[in-house]
Amino acid sequence: MANTTVSATRMELTRLKGRLKTATRGHKLLKDKRDELMKQFLDAVRENRAIRARVEEGLKRAHGSFTVASALMSAEMLEQALLYPKQSVELELKTKNIMSVNVPLYQFSTAGGSAGDIYPYGFATTSCELDGAVDALSSVFQDMLKLAQIEKTTQLLAEEIEKTRRRVNALEYVMIPQMEESIRYISMKLEENDRNTTTRLMKVKDSMLKQNIEAQRKADAEALARAGTGS
Image (cartoon, rainbow, N blue to C red; front, side):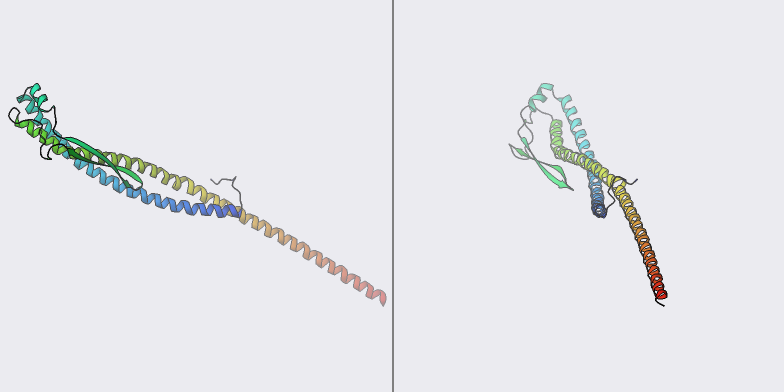
């Protein structure tokens, strides 16, 4: 429904047409952004599913090895073996921009000891199953970090998709129809005013024409009267 409080002037009509043009362009850009965000989101979801499967498999393998190691070693020996790790992990957080959404990038590095030296204990008093568990956890750590990164990315993309969708719907179903209706309303009012003005001008013209004809008749009658008197 048109906003009847809008000023039905040509200046307002020009302003609304400019706003409508801008809104239409913005609507197209937002739809393109929404579509690209959806593509990125679906790619992230597929990657998340693949990485999660690897992480669950790695954790399952590590848990199984720890379970066997716990059965073969006493709790005190197991705790003592893992009490002092040889390496420490340093985590670095960066961001990457995806369609105006800053998503995290996690990178980690190890400090202390060589890269392959991940066992903080001697092999004489520990079970080989414990070696397998530590190795499985070391292998799955990178995937766990990647999984956290992807899940945060999907969350941020989903939030941005929802915001963009609301903006697209607001433009498509509220703002643009309202502006189009207001433009039609103003155009009709201006056309009606033009018709009224034309009608008034025609009436004024007819009135002036009648007055001229009447004046001419009077002048002709007076002229005939003077001519008759002179004869």
